[in-house]
Image (tube, rainbow, N blue to C red; front, side, top):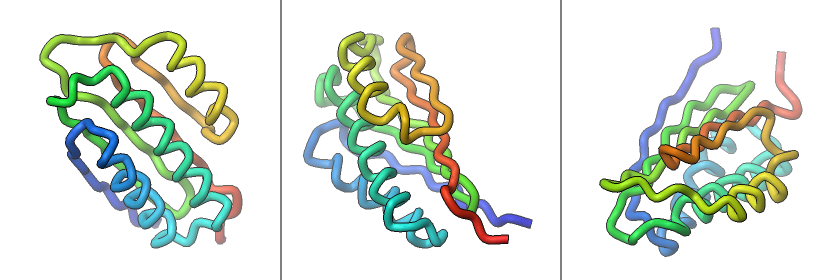
Amino acid sequence: MTQTENIQLTLPAVTEYEEVAQTTIAHLAIRRGYTLKEVEDLRLIMAETTKLLIGPSKNNESLHLSYEVTKKQLKLEAFIEEPILNPLPQEDVERFKEVVGDLIDKFLIDNSKNHIYLTKLRLETES
């Protein structure tokens, strides 16, 4: 049986807190034995995720991050809580896909709700 860690993190939606999100995802991956390459990929994925979501925010919203981590995969749900929906700019969505699309095994960007769902599978897994 694989133990799963579920972590919820809510941060102010400002660039000063992007490093907290990156450090959190890296720490969770390190705790589960992810390789240095996987950890660096996850830090980049997190950086691009927060950049995409925080970009259109009005700096009074919260960035919600939900991590589900096992030894085989890491799932992330990220969204900005906004009273009035402000769709993510299409050019920013395209940049996100270009920069990290190949690093993510599965992802969905729900532009109408400012949600990003992604899954990163392990490169190497122990038996």
